[in-house]
Length: 162
Image (cartoon, rainbow, N blue to C red):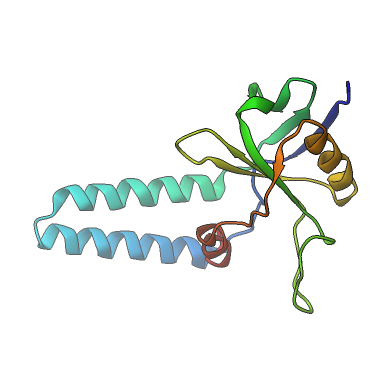
């Protein structure tokens, strides 16, 4: 089966942040750092300043367009290939597979569980129309279909505006 599916998506959902958001970030970082210095915890103060600077940088940075490809060898994300042999399971989240509350929006996502030790579950945005095609390709490669959801930390970060 020589099916190939190529699509692109933003690496993360871009959000507009107001000046108030940046002021709040700055106030939290400065007060936390001052408190750490008062308690002579200089390493934590430096960590807070570095973390705050990185948060500010990534809040300003525009997301890159990422190319995904399902081919005969595996799933390619940018220049990295995840061979089918290294994918333990997958799940395609679409409107058909998720029960939602009225007014709740479900993002179509493609999850894979890899053999990586760090961040083994990868979530990839897809179009609703691609869900069936991805599903059939993964099943044809004898990969287990196991339901997966966004991690709770991702939902918390979403709610906080990250």
